[in-house]
Length: 55
Image (cartoon, rainbow, N blue to C red; front, top):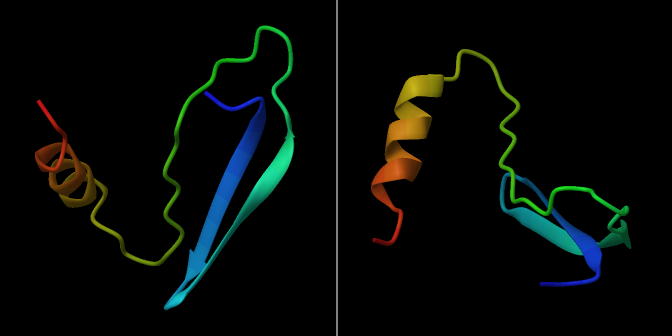
């Protein structure tokens, strides 16, 4: 793992990433996807990403 949180943000075809800050003591190191949009089908998105997981 990395000593700092890394955030990737994308809008349409533009994607940027950079280190944000050091992890806080006891903070859970996790990856998270956040989608912002109108009328997104949350269940379909979840199923699509779940289907991409490595065994």
